[in-house]
Structures are given as C-alpha cells and as structure tokens.
Length: 182
Image 1: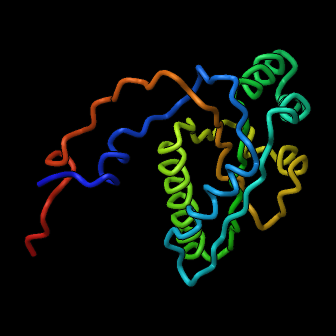
Image 2: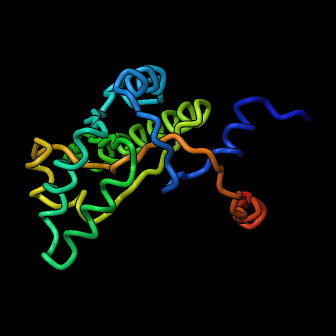
C-alpha cells in the first residue's frame, strides 16, 4: 500500500533542537500554522489552549526573566539556552479540577501541538516541544500572566533549519500491541 503525503510527513518529522538558520520566524507564519492546527480534536469543543508568541527580538528579555527563576549558578546557562531558538511559542491549557476534563484538555492541546509541528515541518520550520522545569515554576507563570486555573504545557522552540537530523529507531509495533481475548 502506498503511503499518503501525511504518512510521509509523520515519518519524516524530527525535533529540531539546534542548528537554526538566521531566517526570522514571523508572528504571521505562526498564526497561519495555528489557524490550521486548531482543527485538532477537542472534547466538548472546549478548545482549552492558548499560545504566547515570543519573537526573536523579544527573546533576550524573555530569556533573562525566565532564567532569573533558576538558582544563580544556572541562570547564565538557562538564559543562553532560551536564546538559542529563533522564536518560542508557549503553550498554555485550561486546567480544570475534574480529572477527566484535565486529561481531555491535555490530549487536545497535545494533538494541536502535533498538528502545528507537522504543518511547520512542511514549511521547513523546525520545532521541538520542551518541558523544562521552568514550565512548573509559579514565577514563570506570573511572568507570562498564566492564570491560576491554567497550566504551561511547554515551550515550543522554533527556527528554520538546513540539516535534517537522522531518524531514530522506533520500538516495533508488535512489542507494543496485543489483543483482548476475553
């Protein structure tokens, strides 16, 4: 059976963690990708996501403020790390107290991020979803005006790239698949 374009994009997609070119990641491009990505499945049409875009020219101030939440000996490292990408998209989700809705919301946001990632890949915009300790820090939530009933799901580092990383092997499906025999 021949693979579809979508199946190919899913298999080809990689996390681009470094090696970004100097090409600017524009807000217009990100908004365009998000407009398409928001068609992700969402329970009860809650659409529990929102995003904060940090452009390249705002990264130095952003990186310094987020890095300041770390112990002094780690601040320079974290500041440099947060200045590596060409832009950052902070993914935020509504975090209800009802466990079922929390799980549904996280699934919806994760699905939307995957949609965004695949769409970005088609444009040679590299993406990696980061869940560093700062996403759990109350001070970072304050810096970003994240509300009490919201959760930072991740910092999505982005930048255009020239070199595609080699694929990493996946565990064979047969090792992860079983049948209910009743």
